[in-house]
Length: 389
Image (cartoon, rainbow, N blue to C red):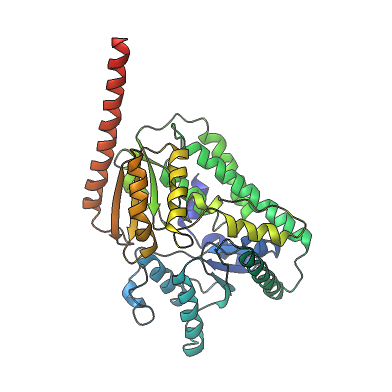
């Protein structure tokens, strides 16, 4: 776990070591960049992240406040040189905000070439579930494959791609085993630790990450179940552990989430098909819906399934200011959850830096306390019923 936590915290270290050995590093902005194609070419994919401590006012000359603070922070780190070591940067259409970020970066490369913005490529993946979208996505993946072959100076063979798919699937299989240790009923891994294990896969070579996770899982499986109210987290993507640490300091355990830096990262399976591109594209196209990629009804259905599968006793929706998509989903999500007796806490318009932590802790502590009292009351009623019998 120490090595995984170090990779999560020192996010550039593995990439810089890769570069020092003569390898190419490709940044991925968005959750839909097919890492299998990059790995098949011998490149190291790393996920672009924000920095909650960054002074976002430095981004004001280039990007509006209408973007949520995590995206503004990612944008700032790209233009301020934090990612100057990248050989290329692939931006996906994971959200409308990232599409606009690509256009801004492309124009800045033209008008202010002194800015350390890496070579850019836009990967357009459609999320509508139609056959025409599937065909379009295959063409875009083949385009990306040809571009990557130009970057590495060689062809990506079917064998290369099949091996990369198998490597990534093994990694995702291990991460799905991690989810099993978080739930249901008797979690053995706290949520903050799970985020570190999952997030480390976005910075380490996949085989190294799989080796470390396999050891971690073997040890974690022997632990005693963790006490505390079991909570599910939805809303904005959490690319740092600060909020989870705050929640779990209140006597809770985060047993699951549906954002891209958590359990959704390992969702979906890439089958090794006759044309490997088919399996790769279908995995990204057809996996569970994200907040920026689906209808409200699809999100409600998926969220209910997750809450039941994780045996969560309550849900917290944590949403950054200006992150509109999760806010649109929330009213119907709350109605569906509360109709099944699942308590919900909304923490809306939050800062990326996690400010006003005393107030947040007070609200989370009260929410956890209400769940604990409710569970105790139900146990007391059950005991009374048994004694009467």
